[in-house]
Length: 106
Image (cartoon, rainbow, N blue to C red; front, side, top):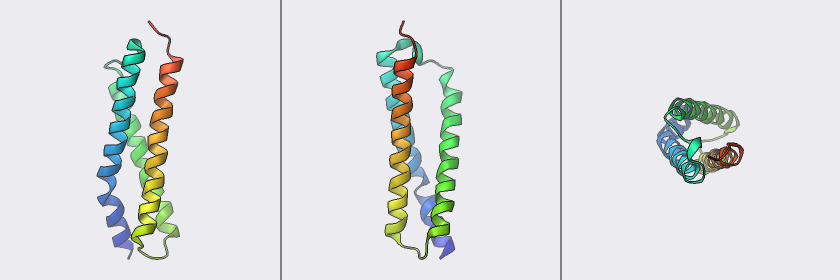
């Protein structure tokens, strides 16, 4: 049972990263469109660091879900996965909006 839950979460990590990267790139494109000074080469290290932090959050979310899982219910895992994806997508969008609004326009 324990290995099945871990296997399920690890099999969905790539999908999680795809959602994260797509929303991050979309936000950067919008930042470039609305504020040309806000996107440059130096954001790449920040993006890699941010993606690493989101993967740590994903792992912590798995640990929290694992502790509360009574069985290896695919529905329970899917609901928890959907929650973390929605939270990460919203965080990316809010961070992008904050960068567009807060950085001065040139």
